[in-house]
Image (cartoon, rainbow, N blue to C red; front, side, top):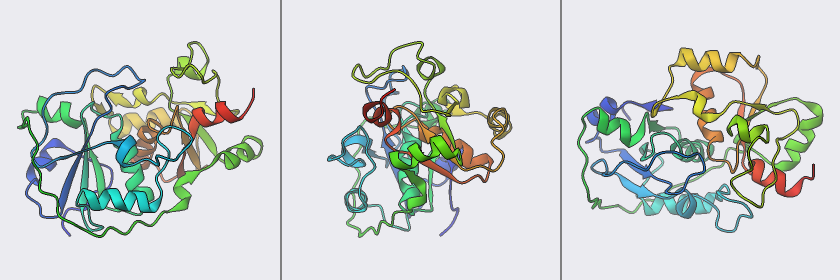
Length: 274
């Protein structure tokens, strides 16, 4: 295995490794997004495989949107897309950075070590002058993926309830400040406004510059404002997607234990009264 990857890769890195035998490029795109992001860039990177977070990498039996998949569901998807445990997986987001960190998180939580997102996604790839194609025709081999869930990556609502009292971990909400502070209604009409008690707010967009992550120095500055020290961090958002934007950024700059509250505000607001 050459050139192991963990967090983000540049367009140049991906261009230089397009012919690697162990490389798998996954293209993600969420047509309707609640963050008001621009329409996706047309075209695709040659060799990439289009996948859906919702239909391919979520539990269809879950009570809430984007529920974390079972190990069997995750392995079945990987097998369908020709992903082996030894694959270098690069995730390309057609919106820049939005759902790609969520898919990155799923792979990490399932024990996959060599996975990263393309920093800036397809918009950055095109802006930097790299080639795209209009039609994908990717032969996908049959593999036998072995998924092994690392439970420390996930927190459930019972843990969050206890933490509201113990305050052993810091809950960081990735929603916009207007949503966090109940200035505007939630985009899902059936979900009440508010935030989890004792949580803090770092809007995911504040970590981005254009379509890319800000520099590590800028990210450290943003996180350091909240005096996190070495406390465990739990990331939340509306439905578990943009929380992963924060988690990936935090993974790049600090060593705090980190996890995702998968049900996020949708679950909390549905099951916990004000």
